Length: 186
Image (cartoon, rainbow, N blue to C red; front, side, top):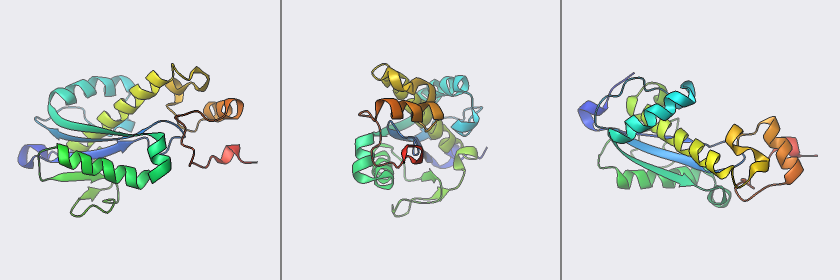
């Protein structure tokens, strides 16, 4: 994995939860204070490994985590929510060097980006882990308020069980009402 933090104070940025039917989208920015072993794209790590690394990252970095609610996503759209989250991270992390995972800067001038940076750049991998774990923890916690949807199991993604729960119970407050769910169309 490429290590950039030791030379220039890079802040890596990544998001989790762009595509689910329910719950927030979370964007994290991380500037590491030291190299951390075993970092990788959060999707390539087990839940247990992500949880372990989360605490290590928090203890050894400057970080900022931004949640966009389902209502904000419905009102402004995913891209604006990501852009606003990135701008908040830029204001809160003291560095001049940022790198966004993906293929766009979301209209932010001079914001470098790199496809699959979460699998190749330590700071972006760390941001990926903070975003994913923060979102997953939220979904497990909110599942207690909405047990009929089993958010703790699928985290709001469009699984067969989640789609069936929507058919039976309708949408709740944390569902993204602007999302088109093909399985629910007649």
